[in-house]
Image (cartoon, rainbow, N blue to C red):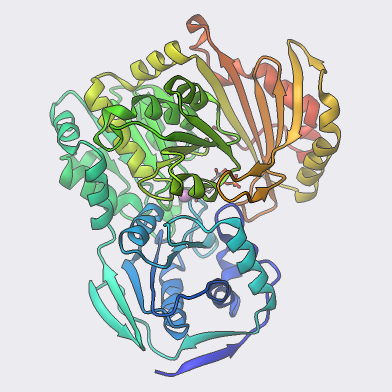
Length: 544
Ligand code: VG1
Ligand code: CO
């Protein structure tokens, strides 16, 4: 088959953000835009000739087209084999699982996670390395730099492949293997959790659950795992048919965008347990009856109880959390006598810690939890972990949470997002804090006194690489914190994120609403950073 060398010109906006390159579909539809980025990925890699690549995505609009483009380009560039999920579908954790299981050279994930999909929505592409994890900054910067110099890309002149029939096909000198997207991932989950016990819980008649796949990629995974393997009733699963536009929804599992599920769990005759996942299956939200578990608390509870599951019976090596994630897990690590690592936002920063065996569990406040079983965060894994704990402890979610807070204290926590604000205004807010912040030390605001203000910088303890400007932290003398940072995954204007945290050791005061408990800090944040002035908004768009 003939290899075509196609002349092209660089686009100046192909720098990957927190999690790959995310743009409007219309941007990706520009001639050569996708091809340029794929070629830049290949050009930044060494020694991949004849090796295996895993490719799949969350099924959103443009997913199928992108898979065909990548297959032709991978063949033209000399890969030996590509493993593709049937229909081009693979959840992000499943890509990680397959790269590791089949010792692939790397993988390409097609996803803009929870960002809305469809012709007017977003698309995204991300490269993962041989450990199964998102490429570290060194590689994403190399990809960007290649994208700035690109002059040609390689592709094969051939028709589209059939992506819907399992089995092997030949594309030039390369093999294409279409596989069941669910099987290998399901097997891994079965090795980590006590499926017999979870099945018994679901069959007991005393426990009802709802899982909401939000019309995104986890639908087929949920069917196989919850229905076929664990015996959940069909009505316990919601929105399990993946759609190219996610049913017009916004598959971000939080209190705002997963409102239908939240209403069920907070309504009359609420089930005992509720959970949802995002567009590409790496996020999770955990709910109990009339109860919401913040992702930060979830990480802490999983860590404190991990020994109750088969996969983590032997204990944890360490815990890692992103900097804005609450410090609830720190208290668990301290009691367990293990190390706690604080990393910048984005899963790519956990990779080295996991590879080096320094951390077993990782978490982010943004509904992401995972472990050393993979190198991505993993939504269904977190749901199964909770089910396993509930099956062992035979308590309600709320009872488990209350017991945790009584024992460790409660870290009241909330994130306020100002989405789609002016990039100039948001940039000014951060610049002003960066310059004037350090002078805040010692200043009093009501009961709070500023202990420090800095711009978070991280030195990777394994390879020594340094990442700067990762968010402005303001710490108070009582241990409360607020963090300001700009999102690296949005596609319109800027998104300002404000993270707030206050510690409450006294069980008598642990049942407040988080917004009430944090009201003073919310006011102080606006006073210090002049949020309303810089964003021209009176209130956040999303509160989680
Ligand atoms: C957000 C979250 C971050 C997460 C990232 C990718 O990034 O804050 O914690 O790792 O999304 O998640 P940002 O830069 O917008 O704050 V996903 O589920 O989109 O792959
Ligand atoms: Co995601």
